Image (cartoon, rainbow, N blue to C red; front, side, top):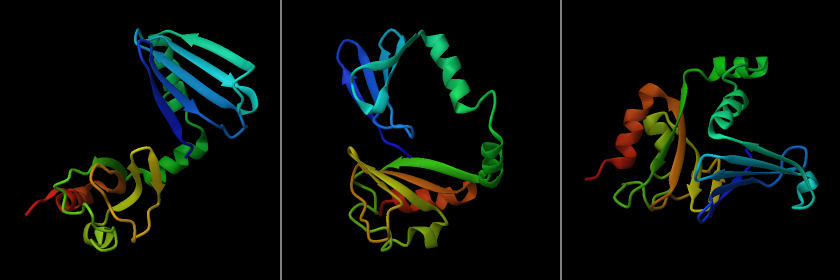
Length: 164
């Protein structure tokens, strides 16, 4: 998955940047505080010249977003993948300093063996750690992305949040 950078634009809103699409373009979305969105596409990743500018209001943005997310039409490959993954759940958790897994390595706590849930990514500030190995240690304020079946998450949550 490609990284999308987020930046505050004081008095304007937020800017989201996808540095390089698969075709080598740079995509910038500016979400204004009033709900207006602007989309900029730059050829070959450069700032200039801008090869496309699109302005959408809030309703138009939501409709286009739904189309991009596959609400109206899903390509066959996505439908097949969803069928395979339909029982899996992906959850995000921010680790408080009181978590018993803080300053412990994933393998040390035997998270997958004990709960049946796997940590598939860690977001640490502006750094992303995809597919962390068992020797990666968890830190306070890490956001961990976990995958498993719904019935496995209570044990996982107990392991990462239970104190004492």
